[in-house]
Figure 1 (cartoon, helix red, strand yellow):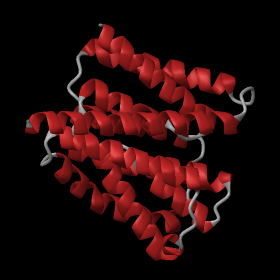
Figure 2 (cartoon, rainbow, N blue to C red):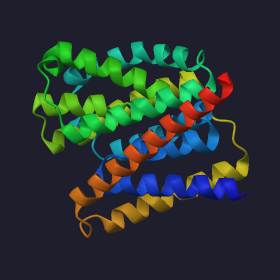
Figure 3 (tube, rainbow, N blue to C red):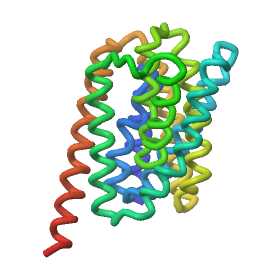
Amino acid sequence: MAAALLLGAVVSLASCVQWLTGMGFALVAVPAMVLLLGPGEGVALVNCAAGVISVVGLAAGWRQVRPGAMLPLCVAAVCAVPAGTWLTRRLPEAALMAVMGGLVTAAVLLVMRGARVAALRGTGGAVTAGAVGGFMNSAAGVGGPPFSLYAVNAGWAVRDFVPNALFYGVVVNAFSVAANGVPRLDRAQWTVLAVAMAAGALAGRGLAGRVPEQRVRSLVLLLALAGGLGAVGRGLWAYWGGLR
């Protein structure tokens, strides 16, 4: 039961951050989930939870989705999801944890930098961002940063970014769950996680407008960076220990 409560605390915090800032669920949850459940189960759980959050969030803004802009992003992401799943099923757990931590760390650093890259513009940029996002989502549970970078380079306003990001989250997480499967949790754990998601959403909505958004975003990125580096360190330690 203690493990379920700890998972619930992580999901509640990540859900609160998501509803408070519009980003950050996977970045906060993945490092902790990977350390608590292992790479495979941790990523599968984040895929499920992030998909549910995206569906709920999209319910109010689906009319703002841009089908023409989203088509190349989503098609590329769906095509790349199997590659991420293939990789995770062939790496030893220690190496997989290090790879996932590295992907989370790279994603955080890219978002922090807010990089503007000519290759991420136009249809070609959409395909590139979608493919990288789909691969990262199925391999490490963090498919949002490449999409965010594409939106930055495309000059999207926040009102355009949020509903389209949620739509992308629905699609990429649905296919990631189909590829990775559903985590093997018992009924008590699922109940705790559902309550934690709801509580986090209520807390995030309640705090919205009261807490400086930029400060929260910075804290989220720092926590995610620490978690990613921690997963890299644990994976490398276990890998080297296994070689001795």
